[in-house]
Length: 440
Image (tube, rainbow, N blue to C red):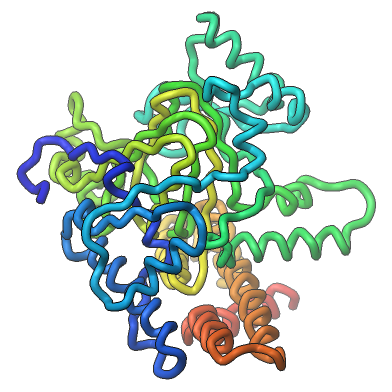
């Protein structure tokens, strides 16, 4: 639809949403028995996801807005009487209805309640990233270690014209109650189990590594004034992500994953920092103009949630002073994408230090590769094996409960199958052998 457009279409979130892609990317034939409702949900989820990401369909024609943010609305959508998508669009509202944050963090005129944040969380340590533009690329920009109170002080000086540099508070770890249809979250459940286990075994003063365990999860608050940005990226471990605006407005620009190759330079090594083709960037990234023709632009308002499927590269710009809650998660429907990323990261990490192979033992070389993997994508093979092992143990425990229903049992079996495919089982074996060698 947009192949001949010079710039991406602007689509209001009133017209298009990603929310109904909550469950995505599974083949309907993988469940061979069970309740028809299970078949219908999995098949419809696959149908929606495949049409959205692989067949070039106009997303606005596919979009069906949820009437409200409740799980009942999602249930009505997913369990439609047939496999066709509802015609027309529906308005979404009420995603943040009843949230305490919307009462405490927002002023009467809809702005960010900086005074409350400073008084309530002023001593909390956060990272504020310089965010003048997206040209530095994702992860670029100087980071400042400060407290929330110090960040609020900077914000007030900025509003008075005394601070030109924009600072964006990102990745502030925060606990909150999840919307019901976002709760099938294996990744953060794993980190919660790690933290619980660590706290049970911990004695004495904390160390830096212990602090990393306590703050390791993918549940964040983002806070920034108008003009702050997040550069072009796809989410960690190819996870799903959702974001809800408590205050303010954001502009999202998203590229379906089948067009990712258009973002790289002519050598396929460097990715563009954003979708802009200004200056000499068009020469350095010769396919960027083609990528722009496939970009979907979405404006997100207060109380609206946006869901980003696995592998969609995107940029985000705050159109107003904005506070949002953001969450990354993995489950049985996208774990295979995270695993594929880990395999690629392992191969690239090994290739990057190939010149060191002759100077160390195979075990030492693998240790270096694993360390670089963890630095690049957050997990190495050992942590990945521990992650899926925790989830598999949880699913086995639930399957064995005597009071479990047939439908619940089928879903837990599906989760177990997705958590432990043959290549993951091989990873467990490799992890055991690798660990034994390291202990020798």
